[in-house]
Amino acid sequence: MSNITKKELHNLIERMPDDFTLEDLQYRLFVLQKLKKAEYQLKQGIKTSTLDETKELVKKWN
Figure 1 (cartoon, rainbow, N blue to C red):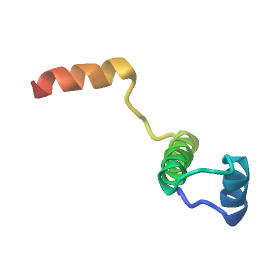
Figure 2 (figure 1 turned 180 degrees about the vertical axis):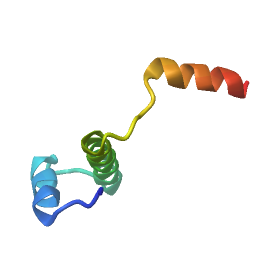
Figure 3 (figure 1 turned 180 degrees about the horizontal axis):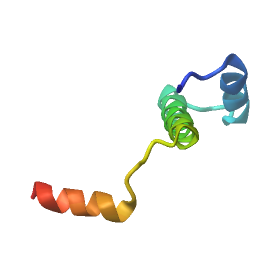
């Protein structure tokens, strides 16, 4: 589902600046993983919450 290929990792590293930190790379990997998960969910027809639905849910927590 959210596996990252060697090619994707290589491309990601190639786009990083020469002086990136490990935290920079971790963040970009995190974002890439979240995007891949969202793409998978869309392809599978899995319903996700809209921003308005999420805001309403948060109101119920308070």
